[in-house]
Amino acid sequence: MSAWLGGGLRRVVVATDEIPVLAYVWDKPYGPGRVAELTLQVLEVGPRELVLPQVTVRDERPGRVFDSHAAVDLRVDPANGGGPLVSSAAQQRARAFGMVNVAYHAQRALGKVNELLGRELPPLLVRIGLHEQRRCWGGGHYRVPARQFYPVESTPVAATGEVHLGGGSGYVPAAGGGSYFAAPSHNLAIIYHEVGHHICRHTADFRLNRLRPGSEQTNKKVAIEEGSCDLLTAIMLEDPDIYRWHRAMLPESDQRRRQLDPRWTMAYFRGASTDPHADGTIWASACWSARLAVVDRGYPASRFDRMFLRGLTLAADAAGAVLDEDALRRLRYYSGLLGAMLRADPDLTDLVLGAMAAHGIQPAASNARLRDAARVNLAAAVAR
Image (tube, rainbow, N blue to C red; front, top):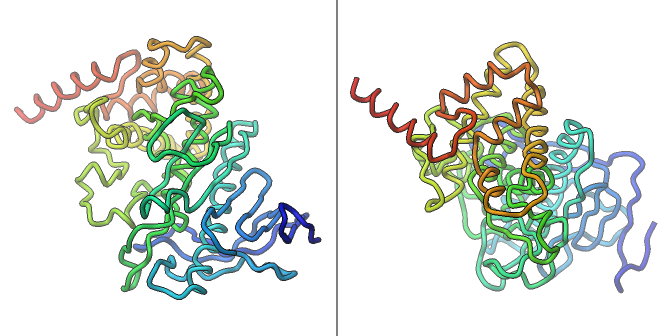
């Protein structure tokens, strides 16, 4: 049916069954993925908005993205990401594809997490094309209501949090040659990582935002959260080299590649003075090694995934109901979340502890203590 909403005609789609869409699926060749016809339950299609049962995706840039004719076809070509060098029609197709791609993968991630946790997380709003008036932005971030954070948000942020994706800032090589405009909405790794922040906010809540005044939460991220989001991305992609497309210029030996590799141990941990994404790679790599160990023992991968997600929830419970530096510090410790994971599934203790120990992560120790011990062990190994 059609209805007048917000002063303009919107096509309202109430879907009792899933409808066909085009989106990327991850595959091994270099590039954004393989375009596949999938199905998705869509409740409403607006000129620049898609509404799903748990996810709303909105393009904040001017101009209509979806046509208003009676049958809105969501099987749209990605148009190599669009960008400023193509026609307006190709730009529109790229924006439409990006919205569908985000909707599909955000809904997929939340659906998986809801199933493993046995409860439903709060709905998520994803906004594309923000901050374009200030700069061309090729990344994404997760925002909760806060007094100030750069770039400054020009509109209020939903109390439960929002994912913001840039419109794209440049080109990367395309699979098979040529170039592809690096629109974050076309990049599965960026999508899943940012949705991961929403999952962390409503499980571990590493910054205890639930205890802060509604409009004075903090958007500051810590290493264990960035690493957890990279792990969730790897779980959704079933691939530890999650950023291989747009970070391919970085060798696998470069920590900025953020590949979940066994080489990353606490000996490489630097602490608060460095990029939390880099230190987070150590935690994500250790968890990925633990997941592989669980699978190698004959368990399904979902056994570890459930352990990890329930560990996030138990970590929040252990933090208590007092917002102080001691509670925040305990949430930053890798050993704290490790302990929560072991409580979530004690039968996997030996497997997970063995894999974590190879990365220098042990129970009941601060990150600094784990770092110092790992560096001593590394120096001794080199001396031999």
